Length: 115
Image 1: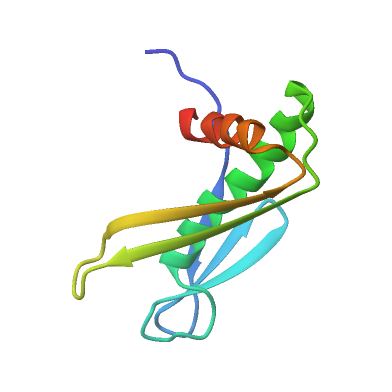
Image 2: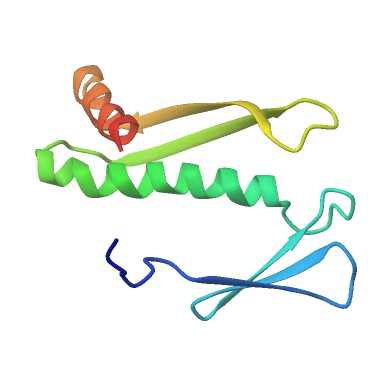
């Protein structure tokens, strides 16, 4: 197996407050709290934000390549967990696109689903 440089690097450290992590992403600091603290965003929310942000940025990049007019992208993501289980049961994504036809919107969302 060949070795390659990582694509992304995030460093997470504990803070003086139990249940709070300090996360460095390049020069940006992001505070993430355990659900029990409920002050900053939670790890689950950060995870879901990464997925929905990927949808927004990917569609924004792909639309011009495909010659599709895309004026606005809104992605709402909902994660469902069972009580006491630290894993998502399922995740729903809802895309709202302004600009493309229904057929073009389906193509764009399909590109996201295909990875």
